[in-house]
Image (tube, rainbow, N blue to C red; front, side, top):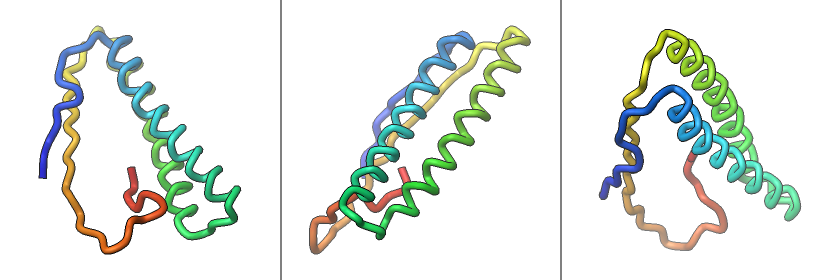
Length: 102
């Protein structure tokens, strides 16, 4: 297992909003693309997982926007910490698509 520090800093509301929403939007684009590719190849296995993750990410995006707007209106800055943890998994056969809920 290895951890990587992705974000570790203090931000004014506008910058926190930009950084976090860009990350979430990128994840949404990734899952949109995965669904598109799977549908194009008529693959049904795994599509629901991506659709579920899209729903979660879109809800999170709205919650983040609302929270940052509310707290930013109260002159709050934000400390943002994000760590990526990679845990190697042994697989017998290479998967054709990701099996995680990113």
